[in-house]
Length: 185
Picture 1: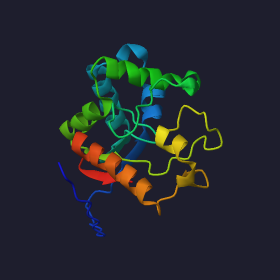
Picture 2: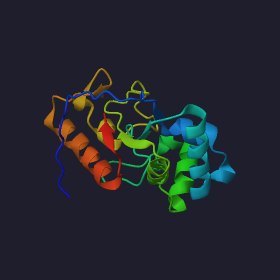
Picture 3: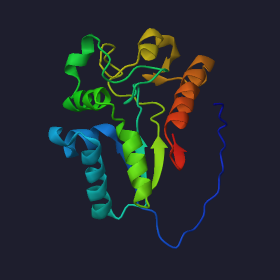
Picture 4: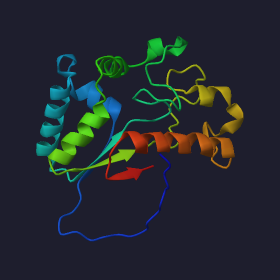
């Protein structure tokens, strides 16, 4: 499905202030969800506790950095086998388990937030720059590794059309896959 990005620079005052959590997947899965709770019910329970604890109005899920936390066609999922994967943190194995069990945590969370009256958004790390000094890090996509000429100070150089095309493809894939109320990059 084709998509159009629209920038609307408006600010709407609301009676209630926004309380936004913009969370990386590693924080949620690694620290907060034990192995035995890596189920749809466990993911929903985690969200319920999170909402109660923080009075959240908006929650930004982050299914992508240099790699995707889901089975992507644009890049690679975080659990793709390669030499650097052995150094990946434990939460990557948890993501793989969820995938193998047919569970997309972001889709589960987005649905649960909506059920609970919290506005779910999708967030993309446009220039995640972790481990840019280590070419063999498990964090890097093939696109990043195979195209050092597309980088500037370790991150992507967005003045290059191929970099723009790659990231717009990632954005399109996430917008088609996830039903968020908004998109942040």
